[in-house]
Image (cartoon, rainbow, N blue to C red):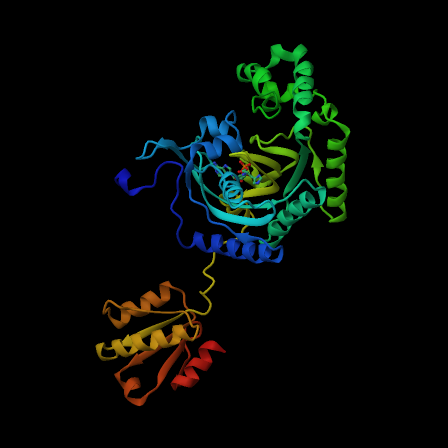
Length: 414
Ligand code: HAM
């Protein structure tokens, strides 16, 4: 068995060709769509002061309590690897005094969870944050953007569930209402939920234990305990979504695991994913950091899960340059240097090309070209060099043509 030193840590993965081609295709498609909506990229550090996450996400959440890679840095400060992107993006916005902005991020996040299919300790999110005051139109646009991004990469068959966390002023009435509704059912709750009922009763709604899952089905929807404007807000989001031809199922048990949410929340799932079926999740939030409040709406999608869902649909990663790539094969040592110069000239003209730099035999070079499955090979030996020509071989039918340099470039770029 190979040494463990040669493998990444559990729950973390190397990403290389060919799979990385699929990732790049997704990322390129996302960037293109995001530009149409006026979002610009932000790259925040992966390491932050721990209080950025504790204050933004909520000290009582599972993410902060159980899943963060937290440690003391050399200066004795408590720091953590980011478990998600919203907290850092909002820390940036609050620091810059920005209250209206449209930003997105794409990068690795870290959660010390038990790894399984679709659940990694290092995973990647594309997240967007549209900062601004509460507005059902902004929320609907954000959901529509998400659907647009999935369309852009050709992923259909997903389901969209929405709910509301209500306004800040609803929180107490919702908690009290749920506690009261759970009182006669308390014996059926798991030990964790018995504790959650007092401390963080919303969490009972998304408990994964079969007993609790059955029991919560009989609870009244959280909206019943909210003030009318909060219910009207969700209804308005739903109306706008229908106008945008997006159909969301209202799920009264959807709560989302992060404490910063207010009003609209949603989750997109895909049946191809199995147990960890959430492709993405988001919602409206209000986050207080160092006395500054930032409001906005956003979501994040797990790229590993997007890739899994696409692969389950039969999408294969492919080198985007494969069709156009050529191999330059040197017949004899005297032409190698010239062919290196030729390769650079062709690449500068936009032609992807490869050649052997290790002095391998003609046969070995042809084998390498075969392995790379290139369509065309440029063969060049001393004879061709002396006559100023290039032999262009079509690997599919074996035909060959002799061309001068302008004609070669024309043939390769045309
Ligand atoms: P989240 O629901 O915690 O939300 O994560 C969003 C997505 O990240 C999930 O739906 C899933 O696809 C992916 N994900 C989460 N944990 C893992 C994991 N361990 N392995 C693989 N994929 C994972 C947030 O992070 C919020 N910041 C979203 C947001 C942005 N809300 C408002 N703005």
